[in-house]
Length: 163
Image (cartoon, rainbow, N blue to C red; front, side, top):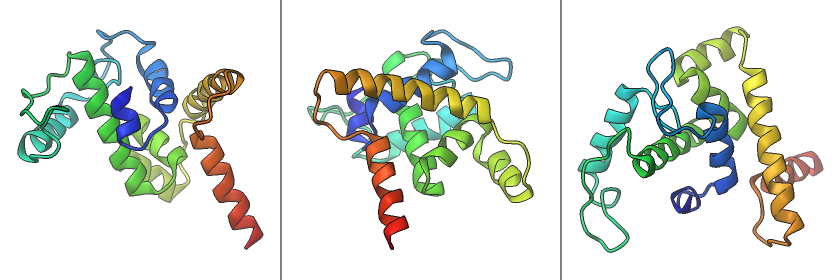
């Protein structure tokens, strides 16, 4: 989960995605072929792995050593590249709820549905957000001072309403 924090995400959000995607089963495989904890399609995983291999900053360990090629069934690689993919979606859509929906549907189908008012994965989104809230509340009960994504998101909404 350090990778999630390194990419600017609350690790609990990524854990909530993992929980919804694979029920925390590292060997999970979907009907359409998505694999691992973060249920990444093999073609998406390979594109991300290629990017990691080509980018000298992405393809390094904490010690600065080159990493081996990421493998879809490797738990750490699956989480790392799944988090990278989610980060790309969050940057692309500038809204974490849209990024969550695009993660579930794929960005192309998500954009089509959004443009046409088509059905969105509301139950999926609600499941992730509910799990995330549970985890955040548990963290808050331990008096962890780290701001949560919801706090940052709620702050942006309050600032926008005040303007």
